[in-house]
Amino acid sequence: MKTHYIKAVIALLAVIFFCETSWSQDYSSRKWEYKFFAGYNLGGSTPLPLPAEIRKINSWSPGFTGSLAFHATRWLTPEWGITSGLAIDLKGMIIKADVKYMMTNLVVGEGDNTGTFSGMFTGENKTKVRNGYLVLPLLATWRPVDKWTFRLGGYFASQQDAKFEGSASNGYIRTGGPAGDRINIETATFDFSENIRSVDAGLMASTDWFFTDKMAITGQLSWGLVPLFPSNFNGIPYKMYNVYFLTGIAYRL
Image (cartoon, rainbow, N blue to C red; front, side, top):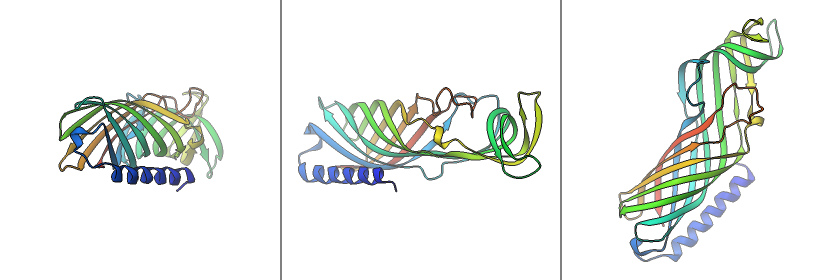
C-alpha cells in the first residue's frame, strides 16, 4: 500500500475514534452526524454509449475494487443537511471484447512483425483497469424518517494510482487507415496507465437504510463527467468515464 493511502487510513481512523468518543445524544437531535462505511465498487471505466468498434462483450469482472470512507453530515434542520468527507476508492474492471477497426497503439513482442504499431485493430481485446482515488464528496442530504437517508450532489477525486493495460490477440491491425498495410496479430500488449488523468469529478447519489440504530446498508452511484484520458490521447478513439455503483455496510458513530 502506498504511503498516501496509509496516511489517509490513519487519518480516517483517528477521526472515527474522536467522533465515537465525543457523541452520546440521540441521533435525531444531533447537529453533526458521522458515518464510516466500507463497500465494493461494481461498474466500469466505459465509453457512453458503447461505440460501434466494440462488437461484442465476451466477459466482465470487477476485480478488487474496494472502498473505505468517512462522511460527516451537518444537519441544518431535522430533515435536511450537507454531507462531505473523504474516501479511498478503487475503481476497475477486467473485460474481454471483440472489436473491429478500433484505433489503438499495440506493442508486438514476437512473431514475424515486432515493434510498436498504431492503427485500426480487429480481433479480441482484453483490458484490465484498476485506478485508485482519494475522493471528496459534497452532497445535499435528506432524512425523511430515521431509518432512511438520501444524498445527491457531486464529487472531486484525485488519482493516486493508475492501471490501464491489456492485450490484443487473434486479429490484425491496419496501419494508416482501414485500407492500410495489414499486420497479423497473434498476441500484442498495450499499457496506457501513464496517460490516465490525475483528477476525476462527477455526480454522486447515495442512500442508507438503517436496520439498527448504528448499522446501515449503503448504496452509492458515482457517475464521472471528466474523461479518463486527456483530449490529445490517441491510444483509444473514444471518451471513457468512470461509472460505478458501490454497495456496502455503514456504521453510524
